[in-house]
Image (cartoon, rainbow, N blue to C red; front, side):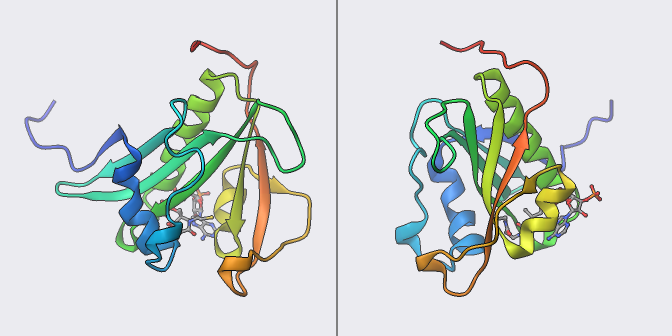
Amino acid sequence: MPDSPALFSIHAVSAEHVLPLRRTILLDNQSETCRFRGDDEPTTLHVAVYDAVRIIAVATVCREALPGSQSDTAWRLRGVAVEPHARGYGFGRTLIKLCFDHAHRHGGRVAWCTARESARGFYEALGFAFSSPPFKLPSRGDLLFYEMHYVLPGEPISDVE
Ligand SMILES: CC(C)(COP(=O)(O)OP(=O)(O)OC[C@H]1O[C@@H](n2cnc3c(N)ncnc32)[C@H](O)[C@@H]1OP(=O)(O)O)[C@@H](O)C(=O)NCCC(=O)NCCS
């Protein structure tokens, strides 16, 4: 093993750590909307990739039923954002895999997200699918969003009370 510093590291972090990237990359610097319901729930996971000096990619997963459902086995991905210079290295895929693992460990059966049109291909590359037409969100102008779903593989396990 070379005795050299790591180029990148991945950590579970608190909500405060993911807010800056969420704000700048996803939310046009509107700080009032960058906190999500579920951010501070004890079962929620926030993950971040660090380079030598700062966070360059973030994602969050929290337990949240699909719209119109009451099931507590659905987990929602939120705030998936990678700094432009760090895209294409697999950080997005890796963070989502960690979120899937977390959801699965907590008994999750399905992961879902609201994907903007420009990110739809990313989620499709990871195996997500959508079945309903795109929609707009009142706060997001003309951006189109897709509700995308992914069935978590394997039997659900729950190693956490
Ligand atoms: C979408 C985003 C998170 C992808 O992150 P990333 O680290 O560059 O993605 P990865 O390198 O892990 O790519 C994984 C796969 O998705 C594909 N992919 C990545 N971004 C894509 C896109 N915008 N459209 C289509 N495919 C894409 C990659 O080609 C790769 O496929 P492969 O494994 O078959 O080669 C990143 O571009 C980003 O932060 N975009 C702006 C914010 C955003 O849209 N977030 C999602 C909110 S809904």
